[in-house]
Picture 1 (tube, helix red, strand yellow):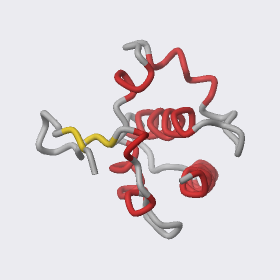
Picture 2 (tube, one colour):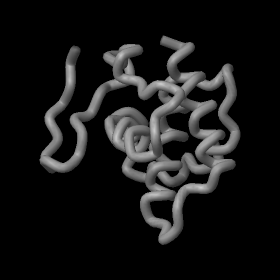
Picture 3 (cartoon, helix red, strand yellow):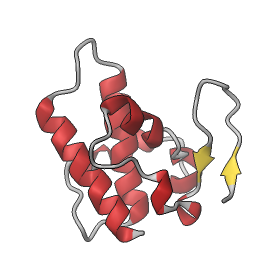
Picture 4 (cartoon, helix red, strand yellow):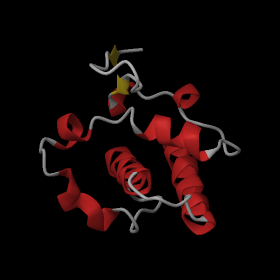
Length: 109
């Protein structure tokens, strides 16, 4: 499994989408901490070919089964960045939406 080392020892190693495997995906009962760490395995700059990853925010709420794995992982990454910078706990609605997103990612592998 090809993983790129993280320059920060506190961040998880990145996993290229082409190397993503089912065992990398958190299970449906995972808590937000585990899901958030998985979201950070996505290197949005390398995968999207741009440093302006926030220009992709429109796709965050528009994902479905037709979305590509890169689009789905981008959505998850942006959800993580959004909730990481909040002073409140993740909402139940967003956590359920994110778990749907995780399920779709898992089904695509």
